[in-house]
Length: 314
Image (cartoon, helix red, strand yellow):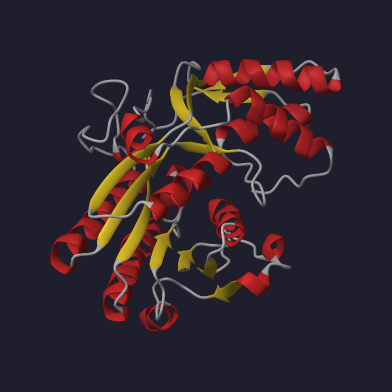
């Protein structure tokens, strides 16, 4: 099978590209390299194509999507902070760009898309754990753009018969083909190893569903193998409070380096969900998804990676 990945030079995308090739797929990436980096994929080009381009370029997309069996749409401006700092670009890429991808899919005759969404579409949960039927009421621009993307792929499913799978990722962390350090677990590890206090926004009782990048990629591969109709899945790992994460990082950094780590609290950030925990029953039953990475194991992996010279990439 030939699979096109938008955002294949990104944190999740590059790890996915590697796994696709290992699984015998032919993989084609489109990425404008604003945040991504193809360097970790060099040496694998014999089994993949690494293209530089923008998902808003319809002509480029239509050319790339010829003779492709499925599209995995990861490309986006990610997260609350990045979207708030660049709102016009966030709307352009996340909403207009998704529409361009869908237009190109229809023009090229592709019938299958996997769309990367986020827990941000839920907003403040009305109940926990959150299942896929929970109302969508995002609290920030990032969540709004992801909800808009979901509505677009649903409309194309209804109007053009596209086979659609929506994957709502939790808080992604861990060592991938390259490593992002701007989400809470990697940020805490970076701060601890630098001898800086871990900065917690709010009282530390905010919680997230933390999912390792390798588990995320496994979920994408499972969804690719089990297409059919229109499905939405939560992709979670281990729910935990931010204060508990800080305690684990303090313990593991001290165990690895012998240095004590302090914690400091800052005011909570506007637009952040207080607590979220995923119900992953549907993907477990439908696709046999089983997250393999717990938070403490993931923290130890990040510390080991950094101490062995891994770069603190943003």
